[in-house]
Structures are given as C-alpha cells and as structure tokens.
Image 1 (cartoon, rainbow, N blue to C red):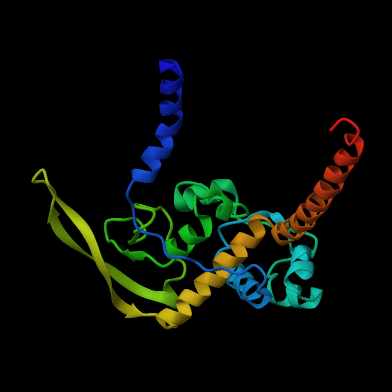
Image 2: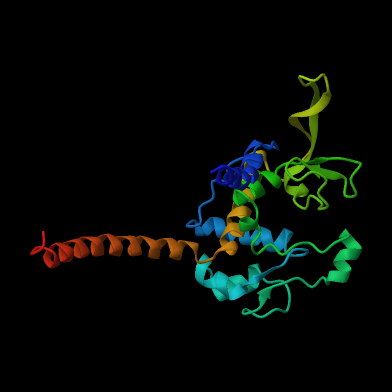
Length: 248
C-alpha cells in the first residue's frame, strides 16, 4: 500500500510543480477557427512578418484555398512572394547555416507551435504583445513570457516600442526582487493598442489553424459519432431486454 501511495505521489509531482510555478499571467486569445476573415488576415500577417525566418512546412499553399475561402489567384497574389507553386510547402529560403550565422540557431518551424506550447494560443497571444526594450539583449528587446528570448520583435513597427516598469518588493525572508508593474509606451506604432491586439489575435488564430487544419471537421464528426453511440445504446439496451426476457 505504501509503495502504491509513493508511486502516485511521484506521478503527480510534475503536475503539482507545474501548477505551483509562477510566471507572467497569460491573456486569453479568444480565437475563433470558424472566422475565415480572421484567418485570412492572420495568414497575411504571417507571410509578411514571420515567413521570412520561420517556415510552416507542414502546410501547403493550396490548403489555404480550401480552408480559408480564398481563390487560387488571391493566394498567389497576396500570400506567395516567391517562385513557389500553389502546391508547395510554406518553406523559407534561408538555410540552417545562414540562420545560425544570423541568429545563433535555426528559428523553429511554426507549423505546430500553437500545439507545442501549453495553452498555446494564449501563450502566443501574450508573448507577441509583451516585448519590451532591453539594451542588454542582442536584439535590444526582451519578453515577459519568454525571458531572454533570442528573437527580435518583428512586429515592432505595428506595436511601437515599450519599456517594462518594475518595482522592488521584499519577500518574507527579507530578500528583495524585481516585480513587473506595467508597460510604458516609448514610441508609437502604426496601429493603436486595440488594432495591434486584433492583429495578433488574427495571427494566433492562423497559427492555431495550421497546427490542426482538420480540427473543426474532427469536432463535427465527433458530434455525429456521439449521436450514433447514444442511438446505438438505446438499440443495444432494447436488444438485451429482448434476448434476456425469458431469464429475467
């Protein structure tokens, strides 16, 4: 019995540590995979600002025609800026060696980024809105969600630049530490705060979509399966009563 309890405690320990760990609070992305207009705007932001360094190689351009409600001409004119064909994967021209020279490492493929992170859409939504000026970092910025991130703030023209204001607090043991208080806008962006949040939400919506393009279809089929199982349960129960009526 004691051995069983020990195994249960060990199994639950990672969950306990995860639940008790701190970190910057995540904002809700409130994405909607049924909003094709949002997905189209997100795709446009992705190819303009992300696809230079981050591939989405599990996705082909022609998939966007079927799922996003775009025509082939619209995809070719607005989302394809290279000599790729409509059936090509969303890859980048930069090689791994070039990426290592520019950034020190190869930027990750973003096909599954929304599924790879815990609370993926909320994490991405908060991450893309919490870059702040930090002159100690190679690209001059840091991030509240991903401390010491090695990525520049590629959307800074849209958001502008902001600095993080910290305050000093003393814990119960008498140790002082810096606690984030708020952001202060340093230079304005081309978008207002609300417009920038909406742009990031559209981008995250698109990233969530490419992480599982068949999610809506899977959920739709799941409802039909549950309805069938419920109907079959009634039939099975009536058959059971009929087969066993002479015994019971």
